[in-house]
Length: 76
Image 1: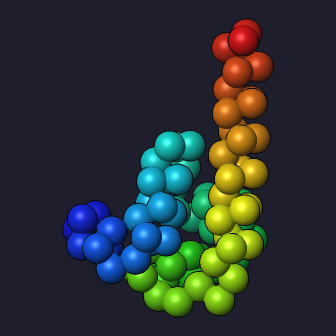
Image 2: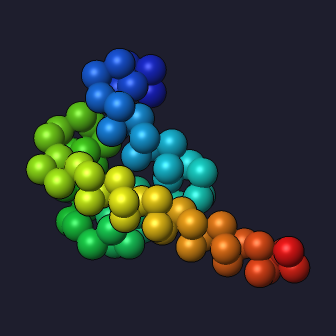
Image 3: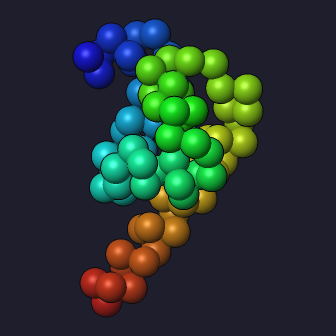
């Protein structure tokens, strides 16, 4: 299924990969991004995202924050 999504939408594949990299569930991701769960699930299923650039910026910032926290926790 992931391959099919990747073929349809780079955004959908990026969202799924982003969640996997930082290790959060779909409900957690929706809450962190600040959208409803159905909206976030729709983006993962290739529905239109009217603010794709803003979503990508938010995902990058959140991932950087998670990585920084992980470095602090691991003593880097």
